[in-house]
Image 1 (cartoon, chains in turn brown, purple):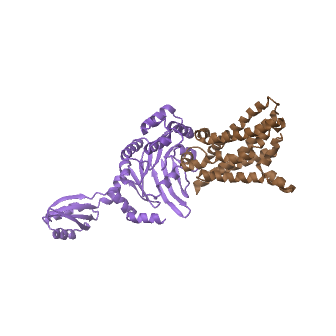
Image 2 (cartoon, rainbow over the protein chains, first blue to last red):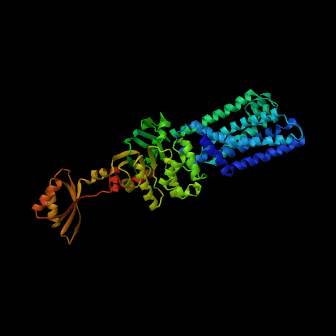
Image 3 (cartoon, rainbow over the protein chains, first blue to last red):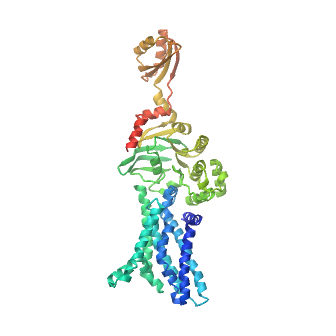
Length: 234
Length: 321
């Protein structure tokens, strides 16, 4: 697992992918930060994370598209699958490498919090709770993107696939704003990634949201392993 | 060391391998021979655990590739048809990665030095793989297979796409590796297999059509046919050959010295004294034999006769699939 993890992490920063992802993330989160600064209220701080969620959904395909598609294109999956290693650690290595890049960006926001401290003392539990929530949120969608990447040889198709799913979620989040039907609003808030994140924004460690994100992550990691396993048998 | 039994692989309705069985002893160098699409790569992918078979089993050193994949895979070094290289890594980084991936235990620096000397890639160890020539990539691919020093090496067409000098070098390398490894080496070049391997397994259309020592394969077909040159008129020689019991059939294959010396290709019935019988018969008729030798077959001829069709037909068949 460690070998794959290190290789993948290096690969992100040998190609522009890692830098582009970080740059876009930091650009948009800094924009939110400047608006939070002008509001000047400590309770506004989670907006840096909450406002970014839709962007993150749309950006994460950048990180996940290459994970398995590239291996298949270069036929390097042959060396991975014939190595004396189980599939699960291989998949975990890749998953964790993408998660590391993402969490690295999240941790950059601690600098914002430090700057913020010059004006108003931020609520640290709130900041840490949001970073924790955003990590779970990203992990779940990275697992989804990795699963899609494992199904195709083309990075482009993998990116478009995860991008479409992200778009569906983004659109889904608009619906509750346009309807007053309590059932639909509740349903969408229950299945929407952003809806599930809302408790973290409000400073609540919501157990059901944690379970929601963790189970999505686990399910799609498991499915990725199955896809690789299945290809061997087809 | 390698035991393959009743291997069958189907891709949907296409059968890539049908009931292929063979065993390879420790230290043997075996050539996999067959036209493109014969199932060589599929067989190798199954042996190394990359693909699963539809039915049948493979065991490496007693470990079943499906039941105990980790133990079995530890013993295999595999060079696939396309070397599995990451273009964005340098050769050193790549070997480091493979070393960690395989969980090799050898002392790294010395182990890499040995491998790089053997495969002659020392000069490019610091270069990015995407900038390497095809020949170097192939050799890095072989180096990768050698990491961890597995006792079994599976090399899928390691000489394809190389220039003539590199081909010779690669063959020499495979021969050298064969001294202390069990090697399966695939090729569609018959001479290559003959040059490198002690034993040939011939595959065609997913079936194993021959499995024997590469020289005995020649004898098997060539042993009963001789080229005979005798001084005398064509009709005399023909008449005599017709009377001989040990001659199954014959055909004229030219004449020399203004029709004084006749050349015939003669198919014998395989009896032990056939050639003596011919000698005495010709001597008695005062038709001196000036040359008699067993016809030499190249692997090409043997291959075509084993496959039992001319190459155009088999190509047509492959195309129709």
